[in-house]
Image (cartoon, rainbow, N blue to C red):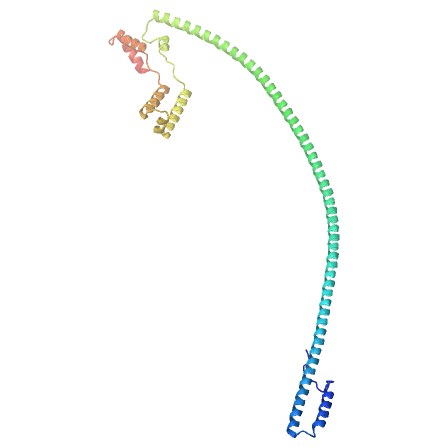
Length: 322
């Protein structure tokens, strides 16, 4: 802050003005009246004040210029100091950045070295593990191949043993078949012999019966006549099998969809049912039926016999008793 307060006592020009006014006052005091004297004193006081004001103004301006110069110099010094501090700070920051960069580079290098070292250790460890795994896999494959070879050999041995057993079984079966064939041939030969002997016996018996009937006729029919009337009939097994087949066919017929089956067979329903009926009739097992020759012989025998003869009555009475 600038000091603008008036300082008349401290100013160097104040005593000179005072002395000059006193001298002028003493010179013209004698020949001037009081009014003029006051006027002159007033003017002298005004001029003195103006001069004092000018001197104070110049002093203040000079002081202001000095203060301004001082402030400018101080501001420039501050700017310079600030610039120096900024430059120092920049230099310090640059040095810090350089040190930090160097430290980062050192840390990065150490880190890269550590990473490379760890990577090398990891790679060695991984290579060792891979090698161990490969060796283990190779060992497993060798053991597997060995086990497979053993299993194949065991399978071949088992197959060979089975083939040997099959060959032995076949040879035994062939032997049994040969013995069976020989036994069947022998049994067939014996059956043939028994059949031939039985046929001869039946022929002899029929001849004897016929000769006896010729010599002594009687109303009882001959055995050979009765045997000639016999017809082949199915066995019980054949009848049961036929009954089972008919029962299964009936169940299948009840369960099936006849219109759909007829459509699939590209037939009408009536034609499909007719085919089923014809097939059942063809496969049905029929009981033995009498032959026309038997009927003719029976009719002829009835005509030959006289109802009033005692022979026929004896035959009827025997038949009733039987």
